[in-house]
Amino acid sequence: NLDANLMAHIDAHIADCEKSMEDDAQSIIINQRYDYISQVVSLAVNKKNKGRKMSASDRIDRIVTSRALALPIFAAVMTLVYYISITTVGSLVTDWTKDTLFGELISGNLRTWLGAMNVEPWLIGLVVDGIVAGVGSVISFVPQMLIL
Image 1 (tube, rainbow, N blue to C red):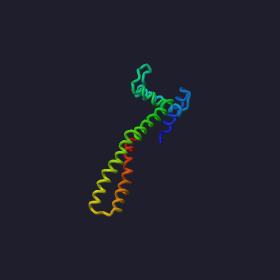
Image 2: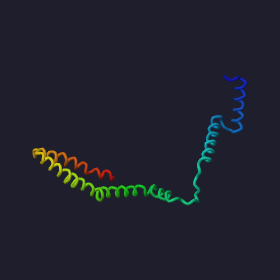
Image 3: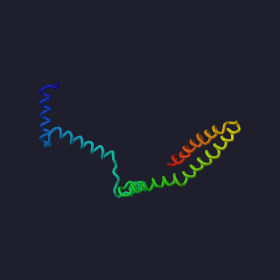
């Protein structure tokens, strides 16, 4: 839609640029874009000085994310978490939940309450020894899962 004289002037200018820069028009445009992007990035990004002292967080990151130590450190942390949740705190809370809470408190009180209401012994066994004991066995593992 441009005038023929204007198009000829533009084409002549493009040819002059290609001749003076010794490259084709598309490559010139691409190179100019990358040069502009490099200038913008250099203004926006501050690279750390190599002589500057590293912070404690940077030193820890360098050790924990190194190629040689990352997996052994991860394995040690996972082993520690597993050990704590299974053998120490998790075991104590799980045993208390299973034996004391569901074994003595809830089951004992429910057995006494159902016995006082003259419920059949087979139904007391079903509710207390079946349902409450089964649900208690499953719920007793929740503390270990929360610790993990």
